Each structure stands twice: as structure tokens, then as C-alpha cells.
Length: 108
Image (tube, rainbow, N blue to C red; front, top):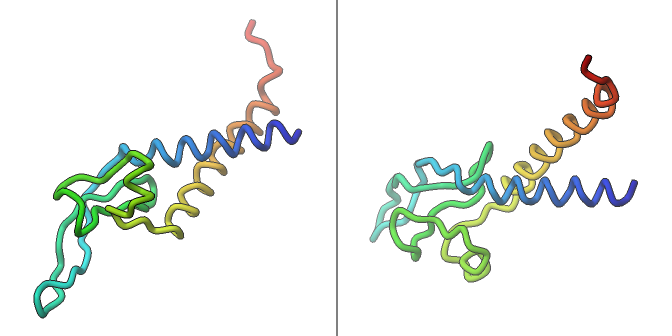
């Protein structure tokens, strides 16, 4: 039972990390010289965008590799990451319970 829980959590982490390949543009407020301006930047993650193109990273890209996350080139939103992880975990759990309920049925 513990192995299945760990396995589903690892799959949810992989799905959350893989969702970074789904990139959209969002509007964020950035500080210009003396005003706050809206800027359109790239963000990654699905269904919640938890990685947003930072001010010091190359324009139009988000660092998907873990090293750029540690360095902090892009803006990482922990709350959206946790919500994204919970979303994928619930999807996997629902698929697992569907498999438990209907998986034993054989095709004839």
C-alpha cells in the first residue's frame, strides 16, 4: 500500500513537472523606471501557471531545467505549484480507483 502511495505521488510530481511544457502568455505587473506597467510574459504549467518568465532571464523563455529553478532566473509560485500537484494527484487517484473498480472485467 505504501509503495502505491509513493508511486502515485512520484507520478503526480512527474506530471506536474511535465506540465511546464504547456506554455502560455499571461499579463503581469512589472516595475519600470518609475511606474508599474503591464507586461506580457511566458508562463508554464497546467492547469495553473506556476513558473513565470523572470525579469533577469532571457526574454521569451522559461527555464525548464531544475538548475534554473534553483538559481531563481524565473518566478516560481509555490501555491500554484502545490495546487497543480494536487490536481494531477487527484486525476491519477481517480484513474486508479476506476481501474480498481473496472479493471478486473475481461473483454469477451
